[in-house]
Structure formats: C-alpha cells, structure tokens
Length: 307
Image (cartoon, rainbow, N blue to C red; front, side, top):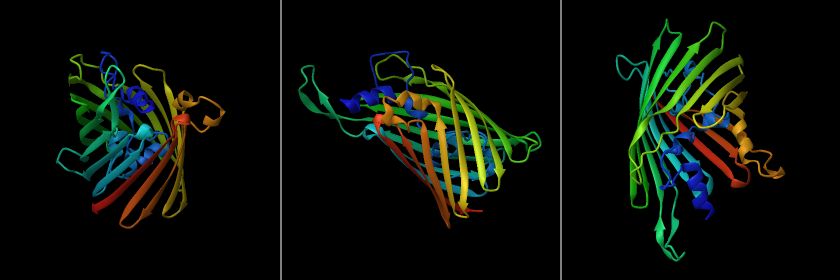
C-alpha cells in the first residue's frame, strides 16, 4: 500500500483525475552532480564540465570533445531510475554543443487486487523520456541559448500514454570573473494520449539561478525554482575541491520542509555528494534524505571519448 500511495503522489499515476499535472517523473533529477547541490546549477553552462547529463538541468551548456554518461537512482518506494546519454561539441554546424539521452523509470512489481481485495496478479508503472539537446553561443560568446526536445512514453499495467515536451534555457557569462547566470523553462508541451482519455497538463517549471567560482577550490550556486502549481522554492549548494581528484558537495532545498514529519526528519531538504575525477572517466555520487520516506542514492559515470 505504501508503494502504491507513494507512486500515485510522486509520479501522478492516478488515472481517474484529469487536468492535474502528469509526467511528474520529469521533475526527478537524474544527474548526481547537480542533485548533490540541491539542483542549483542553472548557471554552470560555461564551465565546460559535464558528466553527460547537464542538459537535464539547463540545456544551455558548453562542452569540449564528446562524452557518454550513465546514471542510476535508487529512488524511494522501490522505484528505479536510470539513463544513458551522449553529448559532444559542435554536433552540427549551427550548434555549439548537443546530444541525446534516454531516461527511464520503473516501479518494480506492484500487487494487483480486485474490488474485494483479492490478489489477482501484479503490474508495474514505467516511463521513458527520449531527449534531444542542443545549445548555441551568441552575444560575443557571452550568452548560451539551449533547448531540449523530449518524447515521453508512460505505461501503467495495460494503459499507456504519450507526450511531447520541450525545455528552453539560457546561461550568461557576466563581467564578474567566475560569475554566471542561468534561467530555464521546463516541460512546455502536451500529452497527446492519456491513460484514461483525459489529457493531463505537463509539470511546467520555471527556474533562475547563479553560479560563482569564488576561489579555485570553492564553487557555490543559488537558484529559485517555481513549479507552476506551487510556491517558489529556494535551492543552494556548494562544491569544494578537497584534492586534485576529489570534490565534496552539499546542498539545501526548501522543498525538504514537506518531508519533515517529526524531529528525526531533520536532514530532509539537505543533500550530500562527492565527485572523483580519475582517468579516463569521472564518478559522481549524491545522497538525499527524504525524511520518513527513506533516502535517494544517485550514481553518475561519465567517460570522455575524444578531445
């Protein structure tokens, strides 16, 4: 029962209520780097550092060479999320950077019962996001403009849904050394085939933030996030270079207040993680407490293919 309730709440798998936001899994960040910093890296596009999933936070980004990325989340309620991506610099003459990715979600087996509560089998909930990403450098190489195009597929037992969505992002390199600004509009689109014949709205999100490299070994970020149906949330995070190949990250999201049910949930809203840079690739990890709901573990591996 807990698994079903959590799935209905976080993933909006309620097939009887039309008009509410569908495809809520789009709000789950698959990138361990940015999730360790509470998803506050909207202005990171000019750093040229990527683990293959930068486009999920802000599609406006720079890249040197090409990379493949693999990510995995052990989410709450037994939900498993994973993804693969490929990004490269100048994939087309009119693009500065671009790539593609596939992100999937699977609930695992859920008990199916009839109207009398008798078990009659099992079912699963799954979603897939097929994404294309591209960015372009303008304004004397001070402004990045990027976009994602997403093809969405959902399945609940024998029901299925289809949708299309897009993201539009910006990143501006300010005259202040190390200070970049970012903004993004996510999940503009529509559901073209619903589970029950009544199309749901997509979870439209607005975001803005800044990234600042204070010192060579200290990077901070601050962001504002506005889901279309709720109040503004504040995200902030920091990254600290411990050694040449080791980085520690921490973040805080005001949305964590929602998960605090008692005094033992004090860590809800915080996030932690680290990054290891070793040839030839890099490994990022994040840990996110969700109060009495449990914890989220996220691993992302990236491998450069060429310079």
